[in-house]
Image (tube, rainbow, N blue to C red; front, side, top):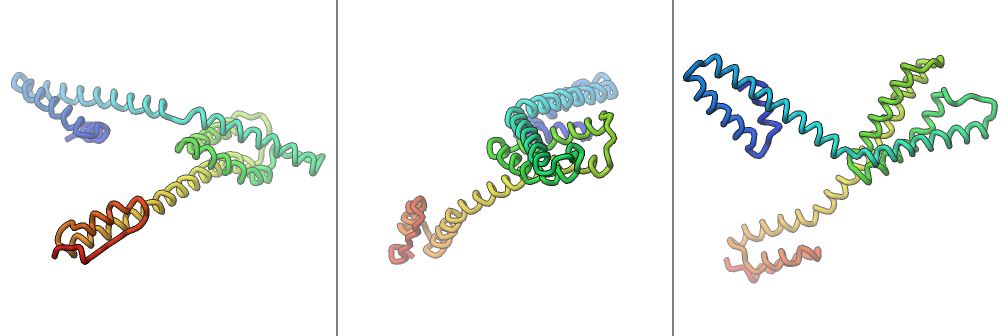
Length: 229
């Protein structure tokens, strides 16, 4: 199987890829009677055409499902944070220039991380998209600006914002995972109790049924006396 066929089989899950490749293989076998080389070329052409169509559909689906609205709102929030930080610094220490200061970006790091955290609360991939938008914008500004910028500021300008946004999204995802795992512990424990009781008693007796019914209340009741050994 060629790399294109393997990739097509991975992209089309649920047996769809195998079915498509099976139909193409059958058609190639039928065409090989009149010419094996022509049949092989036809098979490669059809696999590559199918792969291109699938990749295009996957990309369009990813763009359609992307959290553009939440990410754009978060990007506006970062812009507001930057303006507020500049105003606060100019009032606290007037006469200094903070637009091209790496220290200002460091001060904005917790705020950007908080914005990324909130964005990931609404949509899972919003923080990642926010970081990507900030990375693209900061890179383009650093390349095409006519202002003389230090390498320290360019590195901070390109790196701090995206890293902060991604960190906020990562913290949100880890918290969600921890809550999900914590919520699943009682259920897993009670399921383990059910399995142990069924193995001990030899069948699903009334103790198992009682424990299963009480699972939603968080109470596990086991009565070994009701087991028929």
